[in-house]
Amino acid sequence: MGDIIFNADISNEDIIEATTWLNINSSLGDKCIPKQIVLGIYLLLPFLRNSFHRLFRNGEFPTQWATFIIPIFKKGDRENPSNYRGIALIDVLSKLSIYQVLTKIVRISDRLQSRI
Picture (cartoon, helix red, strand yellow):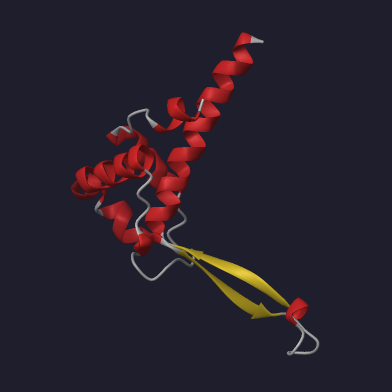
């Protein structure tokens, strides 16, 4: 099943659809601003498609796309770790790759459900 998901080709349309999922006003990692990705998507398509293919076919996840967890103090004793909650800052390219995985899993799940 994993091979079906991760060896499936990613089309330009898949990537463009993923950009509609981005919230251009949200916080993100320090690499890209979602608005820039959305506005420049047609220029970036070859790079994004090749990056996603390497990610899914070879398991090569770029270290630059890493997620950062930032501890945010809630209340109480600042020395107590349970008084903090984590906020994940996810790079926009990671968000696009997550969307690719999500849509592939949903499509396969829908196909399997239709067989039942």
